[in-house]
Image (cartoon, rainbow, N blue to C red; front, side, top):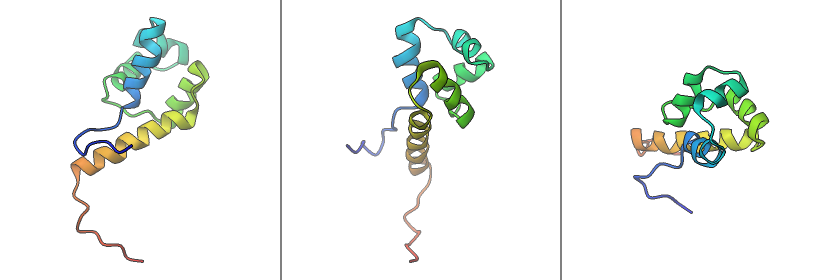
Length: 96
């Protein structure tokens, strides 16, 4: 399914908040303590102001079992869509 051009895919922070933190009653501070990172890292991810890195993806996978690749894929899809909104690639032509 293709998203409308003006809508970004779900940021992994929204997934973290809606699918894990809210249902289990976990705060950003609690998740951070459970995975051994600063609380602001989780707060910024949940707010959509920070990317999920490979390190964070490994930690979230260990805690929730969703898979490192899933977290990184969510981030990659979000980043790719954001790049399309922020840049015009139409002048670049296929070389090969």
